[in-house]
Image (cartoon, rainbow, N blue to C red; front, side, top):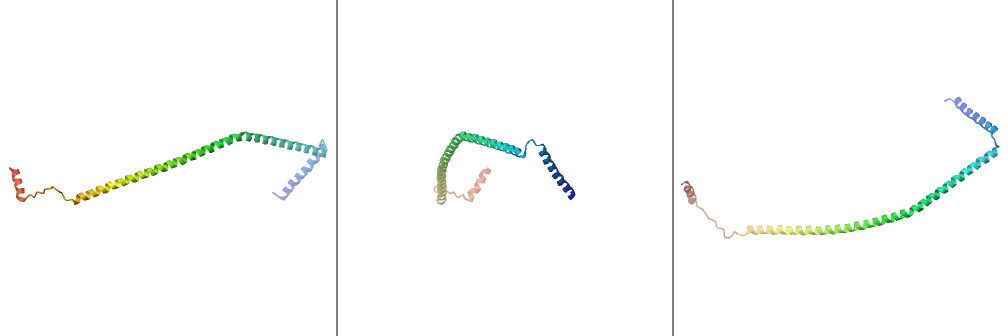
Length: 156
């Protein structure tokens, strides 16, 4: 865009503004002071209306919060009580679980000791049996001649 076209646009805007102000002044039904006073009154009325609406809305919200607060407080208290009960129950369960683990650990330890004692006693008994001489055992020595007679008897 060239400088001439930019200048033309700016000049056109300025001329349009001047012409619009002039025509508005010529056909306005009131004087400038009266128009400004009416605009100020309209703005004051709008401001007052906005303030009234805000105050009305704020009072409604305060009422709603005031009516809901007791039920929220009651629900909060109820939930706190339930959480406290749950904590107590968890503590009880933790204690009973700890007791059960301790009891079971003692039982397992006792069972391991009993099995160990049995194994040791069986090993000792086996060692004693291996070291003692056999009593009342009779060993018979068979000579070769007796061995040769046995097949001859079978042949007959």
